[in-house]
Amino acid sequence: MSHEYSSMPHKDAPIGVFDSGVGGLTVVREIMRQIPNEKIVYFGDTARVPYGSKSKDTVTRFSRQILRFLQTHQVKTIVVACNTASAYALEELEKDTDIPIIGVVKPGAKVAAEVTRNGKIGVIATEATIGSQIYTQYIKQLNKNVTIYGKACPLFVPLVEEGLWQDPVTDEIAKRYLSELIDIDIDTLILGCTHYPLIRSTLGRIIGENVTLVNPAYETARELKEMLGNKGILNEEPPALGANQYRFYVSDGAEKFKHFANSIIKYGILSAKTINIEQY
Amino acid sequence: MSHEYSSMPHKDAPIGVFDSGVGGLTVVREIMRQIPNEKIVYFGDTARVPYGSKSKDTVTRFSRQILRFLQTHQVKTIVVACNTASAYALEELEKDTDIPIIGVVKPGAKVAAEVTRNGKIGVIATEATIGSQIYTQYIKQLNKNVTIYGKACPLFVPLVEEGLWQDPVTDEIAKRYLSELIDIDIDTLILGCTHYPLIRSTLGRIIGENVTLVNPAYETARELKEMLGNKGILNEEPPALGANQYRFYVSDGAEKFKHFANSIIKYGILSAKTINIEQY
Image 1 (cartoon, each protein chain N blue to C red):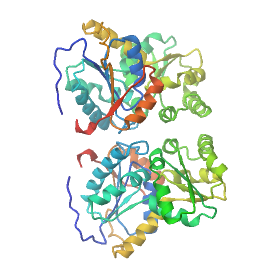
Image 2 (tube, chains in turn yellow, red):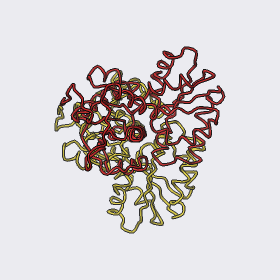
Image 3 (cartoon, each protein chain N blue to C red):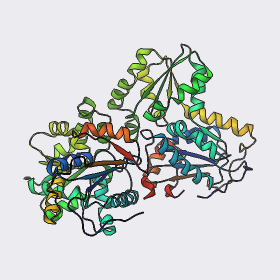
Image 4 (cartoon, helix red, strand yellow):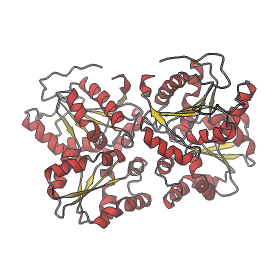
């Protein structure tokens, strides 16, 4: 373990972003769009993916190792771009460091609490995120007059990773997962897993146009921008020509990661490097 | 790391069996049926499951940790009840220990090479197992006059784990994965992932009754019995009353494992214990 973080973050220090694998790239994509001058160091735990079916202890242990890895890159802030890790590990990580940490759950919960009209909010996510009841807790803190309906959707991640973004099988599975939420007549649906924005059009078509889809990736990038601005560490200058603005690390299969990542991020991921995360 | 194995294995020492998660229980089930006097220590790497989409280096590192864990239980032999780990790590494990190790690939390959009549053998498995070409290598050593057609089926594991053993969605995905193999007119199909026997009836219906399904779990238990007999370490006595014949360890989620395991093994899994495999 190495801990090289200085308590005086520089504007031009990178933002650390991590996820269990590739899903967090939907968050990276939003950060690139909304604050294009920032440097990013991304870590995807592809050796141990997925997190969504695993326990709090295990996800917290993995997340701590990743925090230590990102600290070696002198990051100025950390974005937990994984709903499961945000649900299970965020509070523990905050105890381990002074670096500000943003998860994806709070920003999504906040917007959902604001936009609902009939007070019925659906959350679709991994087993772990739904089991943690974290969205319910955050939303209830902001708005007591709502009811939150959670639905675990374990097949969405493998379907997305298999590339079936537009496919009758994904339609059929989505119909099953969403049917209760449709019957309940929710008016707001949180896409509570970073993979889900990739099947947003399928989900929107099946849930119906009267339901507002909340994408926590978008809301997280907005909150990140605001937080960096408030702390005076938003990078206003574009990085120097030739600077390595975006760096990608994974715990397994860098080439495969690069291939999938380039289907999500149009900016082009030139390289990704494999590291042994268990050593951190 | 601890290494307590004695080079003089006792008949009544347990058999170590490991897998990336729950799939290896189909192998355990066959061992229980075919050699019911044996003790078993099972390890499922549920914290890092699945292996089938990961690299050789990573799967080998994980498998070595598990070997060291099983050695602390003085096992008399080890069964690698995971096709991916058998494909990637078996040779490396054999360098690390004198304990005899059996994988699931060779026994399945052997039977397929024997039973094919038209010389066209299909193999369905994870991306990793198919990519390794391991079934092709073994079968070609035994029978040069055959052609092996491999097909990676990444959605079968999540579908099985979601409980969709008999379901129109599983049918649809199976039709897609198997269509090329049907067109090629294979007469033998190896179920090259330990999860697949759980959807055997779906696979058999779609591939057609003229195709022989080879279940490596069954063949592995047969070869294990023969090997133990040849070495004079087959346990002929049933374990003492009250002996803990079957012990199950996982790296995450022991309760969830127990629940799924009891749907596969009718003998009843009384308890499962979580250990931190990264410490081995």
